[in-house]
Every structure is written in C-alpha cells, then in structure tokens.
Image (cartoon, rainbow, N blue to C red; front, side):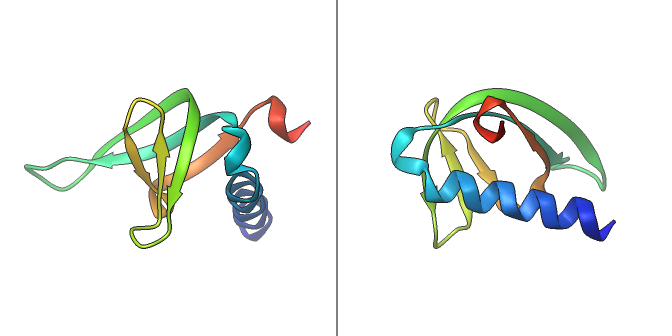
Length: 80
C-alpha cells in the first residue's frame, strides 16, 4: 500500500543519508531465481558499507549487493 511504500522509501533515504555511520539494519529483499520465474525472500541483519548510486544498490560489509528495488522491508534500532 502507499503508506508502506512511503515508509520504506523514507527508511532507504535515511540509511543513505547516514551511510558514513555504517548503519546496521534488518533488510528483507527478493532474490530472483536465475533458472525460472519466481524466487525467494531473504531477511538479513547486516552493516551497510556504502550505497552504489549508479546501480542503485546497498553494499553490505560482506560485499553482498542488494538492489534497492528488491527491498520490501527495512527495520532496526537506527529508526527508533
């Protein structure tokens, strides 16, 4: 719904604005299946190292790269 999308967008923008602090957040995102249509949702709690503006991806400290458009939920104490 629109309220959830707005809140998600605000949280993404907050993380990007505070990226120098290397925020820790719980991210739930979609990983598409490489062989067929569909995929799975994954939730990970991690420190976010940087934001790749060109590819629109959050880069985690373990080098995982999460596409902004694949994120469906973000939580964590940074939002309290």
